[in-house]
Amino acid sequence: MFLAKTKKCIGLMIFAKPKQKYLRRILLGILVFLTAMAQNASWLPVLYGARAFALIPLVAAIAFYDHPVAAVLYGALAGVLWDAMSPAGGFHGIYLALVAFLCAVCMRYFLNRNFVTIAILSLSTIALYLVVRWFITYAALPGLDAAQILYPLWRYALPDLGYTMLFTPLMFTLVHAIVQRTSKKQQKVLAE
Image (cartoon, rainbow, N blue to C red; front, side, top):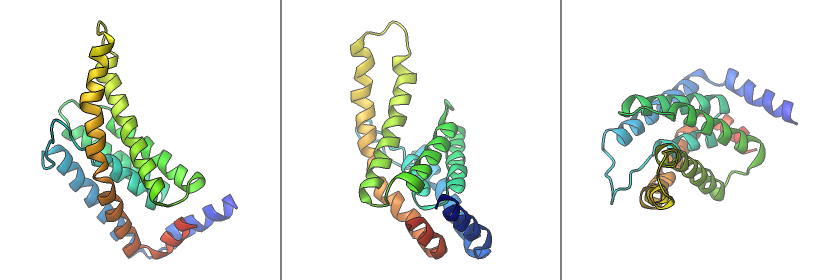
């Protein structure tokens, strides 16, 4: 079963109409670039101190709808753009590539494609990013007491989580529209 499905997906990737495949890759690349610009160039407003990290649901959406290898490459691209535009740099390239890989594997072999899965993928990837960022920024500092460590988690991480979750339906809708319009055969295989 696994080998037959893999051969079918690889066959569709290799023998798909190149025009549609290249168009899908270009459109997803443009979407990643525009989302990175919107996130890091202050196009998205800061609401009560909460920032939106729209690249995370975008990478999860690409992993949800597209092929796993392409999803990992787009995740790495999104993370590299995020690191390049961020003044502090960071771990975003590695994190988003790993998120894309894990989401693609989960969608391919373990989870069903529905709205609950979309919410679970987005919520878990955003929450994991915020906890890792909080741990690196605050919890790893020596000499802080528990209140000083936990306050940023409540003050910044939870509002960031809620604000970023607002972008989940938009990102999944955009990626779904691109994949559906440019590759109907691959969409049928991924739906199986």
